[in-house]
Length: 497
Image (spheres, rainbow, N blue to C red):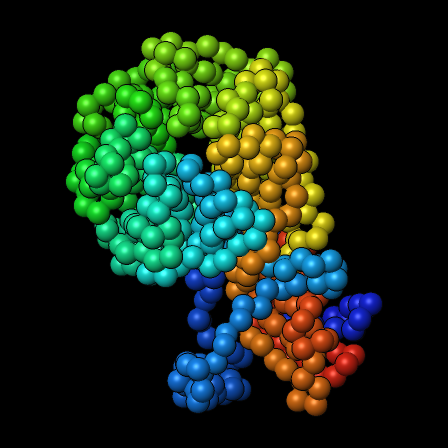
């Protein structure tokens, strides 16, 4: 029974029997939803079972479907339900999170293959925000700092698909249209790569006219671009022109000074500035720039993390001072820096060892004294439906409240109310789980099971009102592609080879 074995697990609610074929020993990495093999793995000879070709109608073609009221069903635990929490499992690799600078109630979060989500209550709850976006993922999301209705993002996916590229919204994220098609990949691109030039604001236009995009130069195993490309738009993101292919700017993080319009860029080659609209760049700080920030409310200041220390310039990059004194993770990978626009002494960064060495280690640090001292943030995600997995960590500050900031806790969203000292689960409404099969007991419709490609599976005993995570694989999650509720004591989950 090595190829086909069953394991029993005792639950406080049910006993689950999980039937699976040699579940793999991979750990600490969630399976990507687009790379599953379709190779025939049936036994040798004529013993393979033919798969029937059943014509499955589209759900919206079923009688009455167009007139029905559809409601999202997040994976809500009994604890969440009993405490009035909407719930939401998350479940996909998160890439980027940001606030609107002019409206602190609005925030956006993008994932690798589960689209983008928007919050209208400062990050407490979330809703899908993908109308018009044909790519499966979203990253680099930036809101015009003078008009919350104008939002730009990079549409991405796990492959270089035709649907990827730059998307623009002019109605606050209610809908998007693509303005620059680009067969990028980007599903592990966490950079701040879109930079609005606040100094280009025109009242008659209703926003900033100049905006830049630094294209990714990472080659994934299935494609991407290696060539440097910096683009600029002079009409708020509708039309784009290639500005430079200067190789020293490859895959750079970019920001614009809010007053001068100077464009700052940082990457492994150093920190640079352009004073001519991105045509040429001057090196202003030697050594690898691990992360970079320029804040709309603090013109002339440039913030940089390097391996050895945290640096600040208060003269538009003419000179830099080493600021960090204690607690700075110089032995790791101090990255993803963010400075609060409400209080420039409040800062966040991440020790991102996953990007540096492949180790699944991710610690967020905060500073309340301008970067002199750093301390580890606390993570409180006990009510999460899925287990925690270390990830690269995009960070975002509320524009007017120095105590509120957002982060990722693995594949779900966290929120802090104390300036980054502690982050709590705040993922309600983000139901991005990659569920592969739903089954309902033929004798008792309250018994339901869901298979999940990335996070094992789940089941309900009350008709889907509340759900319980089925931890039968490894600690990080697991792959299941079929599930069935046999009776009130047994559920079957079928895993991949």
